[in-house]
Image 1 (cartoon, protein in one colour):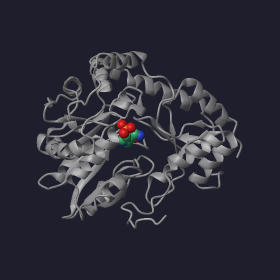
Image 2 (spheres, protein in one colour):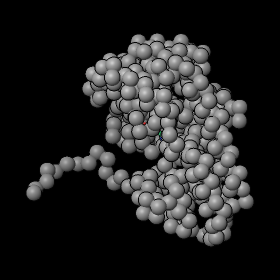
Image 3 (tube, helix red, strand yellow):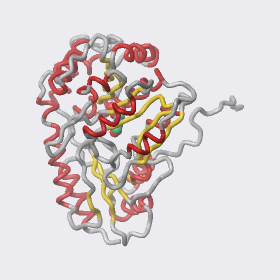
Image 4 (cartoon, helix red, strand yellow):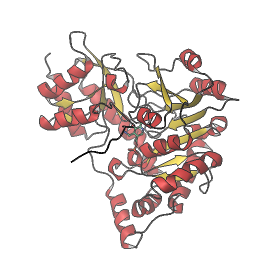
Length: 385
Ligand code: PMP
């Protein structure tokens, strides 16, 4: 068979670390604390609501902006939590997941030659999303070990091609949060410019130790130049449903929707109908912070005194750990070693940097059943290098 010649738009992409670690974990029948998804069951009430929606004939295309009932409930949630009245008609679009809410926004506004500042370590979809538009990713490494933003370096990277800054709080993989100071810096840098902001807030409800999520939704000035991405898979423990939403001011949302209508048109109907009813009870999302904080603490306590030392996790599904100096290999090799020797899969944080900067840190997902965390902790405690 003769192949047609194509020039890859994303050449030289390495196999993602998630694929590598998951394959390895499966091969060794390991406990997978690598990938970010819950291994516990979601609320059966929500499953019943989907069944009810299907039986009630909610099986055809939804509105292209999303089922109005769901958009209204989300607008209500936003007003209660962040004090902003968003217009469900012009400012919210339901998407097939948070990943798409990011990629579709970048598709809508980036052009060849644009520069996009983002912070490393970071979620793996940003860079390909930027590159595929012919734009240039400009990485700024976060300060180690507190993963704060070095604003002097951001300022030094700005130029007339800077079109966007991507932020992510609570952060994957670091568990860090943006502070009021960070938002002030963002205002200082962007006001009076043509710089847009992409704010990835998929872990908005997973905030620990009494901290507050500083959403762009609560910041009128930054809101005017921002796209925000959210994930209902994270809210309802159903990452496999791939459902989320985008929020942006009307002039940006109009552009977003121009692409959305041809990229996917609409998101599956029964799940939107079910989530509208489910999320009308605020307890569904208000109890998440407590649930995940107790999982974080449970796991940390179980592995106290082991070769892993925790870095603070203020939010998200994740906690990072540094490891003993006695371990002579790099973090990727060590993560592989841990799967092979004790059957626990983690993710080396070096994989979240384009140049694989290695601060000897592993990321662990604690969004797991207590039994899973306990078993993994026992294996870690028994590890001998
Ligand atoms: N952003 C971040 C930081 C994430 O961790 C994830 C999921 N791992 C997403 C976006 C994507 O969310 P979704 O699964 O809804 O596409």
